Image (tube, rainbow, N blue to C red; front, side):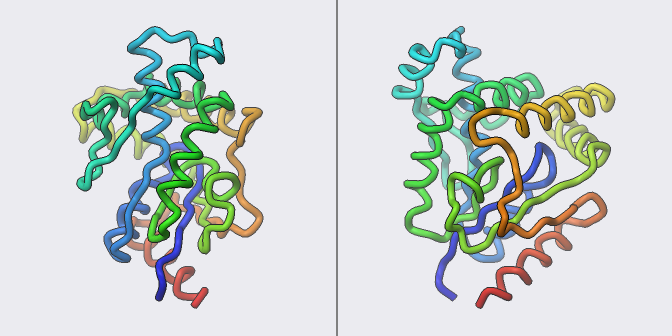
Length: 219
């Protein structure tokens, strides 16, 4: 089968990146974690004290920002490995805020589209199937209950040595869902031709198997 692009959208902590990586392993594809790119912008803004409400100041920074991924999927900001630094709850919320600005989305969408031109990518985020890769051959919209997503984020934080509180995580997930679905620029929504999968009670293998069947059905 010739290489295709696979778009995976869905709310925070629905399992998008985990499943994307598993698909890449099975298909020998490349993974592009678009959420990590927005988190890099959030970390950059925080570190430099940039007023992200000033679109001219934000635009200047977006023209300078350097985000890269290593072959083993480390995330680099100006050459620094920030893979762990961008995964804190604070940066997660700030990423949702800065991603609402058109100047941020325009720059990152251009980068994402250029990367995916050669096909063979699994790309996950909030607007991949609707904005970034509207012509992706396979589109998936992943969902899960708030309780399930909070538990996943709690366990993820624990593995990374980060302290967190389940009640706080649930509150932050609900707030981020609202931000993502109500922002003016590229809100989170299911593409008309996407297949929705509720992963709440599914294992990683079960979700990946289901998507592999969807991929096979298009041949």
